[in-house]
Amino acid sequence: MTRKLKYALLLSTTAILLAGCTKELREDSDTPDIAPAVTVNFNSVTGEIKPLNGINNGPASEADIQTDHIEWGLDATEIYRELEIPYVRTHDTEYPDGSDYFIDIHCIFPDMSRDPADEEAYNFTGTDAYIAKVQAAGAEVFYRLGESIAPSAEEATYQYPPEDYQKWAQICEHIIAHYNYGWKEGFQYGIRYWEIWNEPDMPRQWVGEIEQYYELYKITARYLKSIYPDIKIGGGVLSSAEEEDVEAFLEAINDDGIQTPLDFFSWHLYTGNASDFTYRAGVVRDTLDKYGYQAAETFADEWNYVDNWENLETTWEKIYSPDIAAFYTACFITLQNSKVDGAMYYDGALTGKYAYWCGLYTSEGEKLPGYYSFQAFAKLKQMVNQVEVTSERSTEDHGIYVCAASGSQDVILMANTSDEEVRFRLNSNSSGTNADVFIVNQESPSGANQLDQEITDSMMIDMKPWEMRLITID
Image (cartoon, rainbow, N blue to C red; front, side):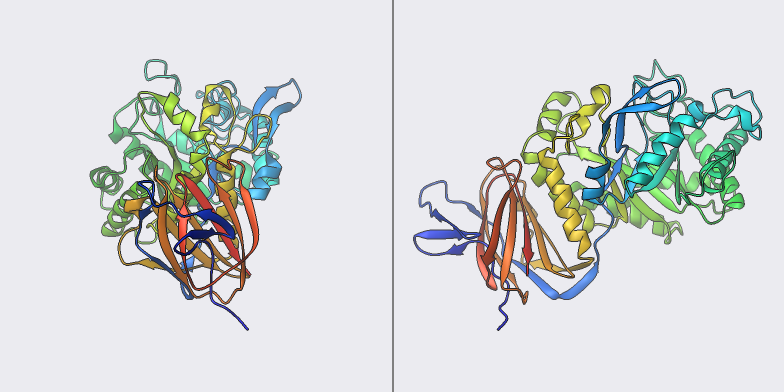
């Protein structure tokens, strides 16, 4: 006899059964906040779980460049495979210490006076090794054509607009030829996504007028698509994708009346509020549609937690804390429900001071709390089919985020990003009878498993402050 979903806290007058564990019901001022009831309908498929667990850089980092080979301080290939990372975006690769050897235009084509058709003008050695590691991890390369960030605008060397945009486009042409079409003893990787530059609205990334970037994009995109019509060319890559910023880009690249190719538009968001993704993704999608780019994909291809740009110490403390698992989980859930096609976390590399942006693992390969949010989302994505989750009012006002999927199993992913314990009723119609529950919170930073829990179709859930929870129903 099948039974409908039952998980978590069965509320009585004296106790709460939390995922099979009894805990005393508090009757004092610490009683949890009450959030609206959440209903999961496993019979109503709303779409597919999207490839949101991409990442910038890795799996290899801390390169020690020898005369004839590269030794890596960390090789997280197995972690990337475990997390089923779909994309690796190559930006700020091995920054700062190894950034003169990998990916960037000046690394591959160091002498801009040379002819772009001259094979001997190119040095692919370091980039070949790096991309081979991405391929070995089972991820798709999302290749950023351009330059890594400068230490400051005053110290910029390679972040100026190219002197000759057409020549720059021809250099990009040959980089694509090397990795996709075997040119210069190259490869047949079939890399689909080629992104033009990064954050031209930031002075450390583009030491010039923003209009110069628009022109570079227009010339390069038109040229590359005329030669390689099957690849995807994209740009924008804005740190501030407000409507006026997206409109300015789209108007400029089409100012001669000819529609410039734009297969995808990328944008970035660092925030302390996961719900911010909804607004930003909506602005980008709606603006692209208004300008005739309904087929263009959108990628949030740099994102992470930021508390205060003026004091990154508090940000990095959070990224390494148990709280970050709930925050990352909330970001995944918000992105899944937003008008975005994919996302890439910044960053998977562990190089110099920028190692602080990786909240997934340490330089010794030790798994951090953030790892488990990626692991949980990978489980959700394996189920393929997103199902309907509704509530009478927004649960996000209480810090509660919920997403669910069905496939070989029924899966519910949830997070509490509040500083308070929050209670809500969970209703659902799974035909499963038992659930495995995985929890990460301040008390269990490496996760706690509660296996083979009996379930019903309606129950009360108590979530501790900054807690993520994955429920897998059989």
